[in-house]
Image 1 (tube, rainbow over the protein chains, first blue to last red):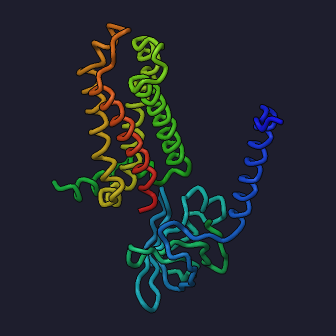
Image 2 (cartoon, chains in turn orange, blue):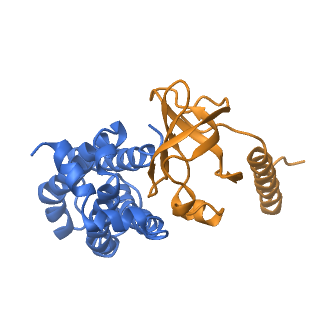
Image 3 (tube, chains in turn blue, brown):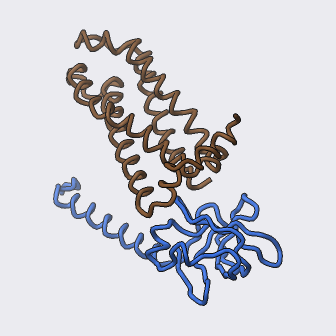
Length: 125
Length: 160
């Protein structure tokens, strides 16, 4: 008996490994995961929008709550528009709620999972 | 004018706001930047690998002429697309550690490539059967390390 693998056996092994890897990846994409560099713990912040930068690479807002003014990173403009939150949907002076994670080193920076403004929630991930 | 003022001015130009505000312009520029670095690194990888000893029967001159051709398009394209993306977010980027490291590594990689070309490559190309000196191999290895470093830093800009 030889233990040497034939070419079809190797191909089948590679194909099985690729399928397993793809399934693992798909499963992990469905599960919750944090943003790289952020805390991994989602918290809610409600405050007043003090500034809006609707631009690439990411839309950002300054959100003032009872504690401080947070710099909140939202999503690229193309995704924001696609999800139904265009430039005119974010105005200074409006109240907004975000579910967001704190940046691990940049004090006061948040990365938002979703934003709720004018009674409408927009997923940003 | 300091770096801070310069980047603030750049960010305020019409080109910068067009890049920042267009819905699909920024991702398009980003894609062109990635295509260009893929072409550049692919070319350099083939050539450096040959200098390091892979496929020794491939004629160096013919390989260089074929493999380096994309670089003449890719390098200017990288500079232009990179400058456009930089302009959109300049004042944040000048403080970004990964961006700063990349801006040190890019000139080093270019100088290293130039030194390799002037120091050894021209004579090596004329004499196909010539033995490749260890110093030339060292420059080829450093070239690969520097360009990999450039790509790593480029990607890390979004994560630091």
